[in-house]
Length: 306
Image 1 (cartoon, rainbow, N blue to C red):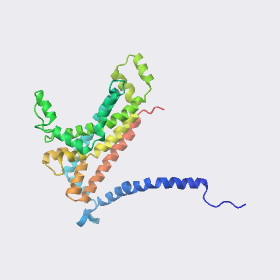
Image 2 (cartoon, helix red, strand yellow):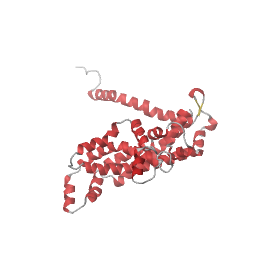
Image 3 (cartoon, rainbow, N blue to C red):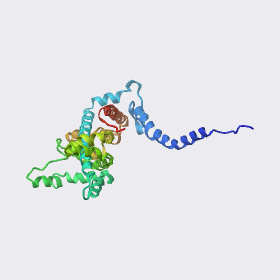
């Protein structure tokens, strides 16, 4: 009796596995991995005619030398970091507190959840334009309320003291709904026995939130922290919609321009794609550094209940 020819069942399973994985793998290579290396290559060249990138062996690091001498880039990095450290921690604190409140058995809790989630499904451009009207110094609703209580009008978008804060507020408000939903799912999964034991010990609501809820939902907080920081370090659309594609007033733009907004200006306004590529690589390195730091630090504060 001759042995049957062909692939074994094990090898057939492998082939089917590779077949189903291939589209995702191809998309990852074509849309993520290849552009990274292409951008890195472009960052070492100079922009020529018709978008052609020319590599000068005698000036390979010219864009990076220029980048570190460009004060607008340093302003952009500073603004990006300040924006991140305002919007991300404050957004997480609000999400945890509000999710804790909306996890209680209160009347109309479903309505509150829908209202907080609505900005997530709205177009970012529409959200930003609504806030731009609200920030208007003369007829915006925010200044109208401030004047109603006897305060002075604030130039939210043109005062260098408030312009970056204004962008952070829009970012927090637009992303809060998604974070609340994630936190509600985590909080409702916490065993009630922990809270019952805390009630017996006479713990207050704030104490239970800090000592029970926060540690037990720390994996979800870590997820929000990682994704929130990556999103904040790539911030572009809010600044672009509030301040347009032109530079505007130099002092205001220096106080609000982010690294990705600076990239957009160089790539699509100045059309210097080589220099823009160097900016993107710097942003990529910054994001990688913060992500690695968070993954190392999470061993100290993230609690995984096994």
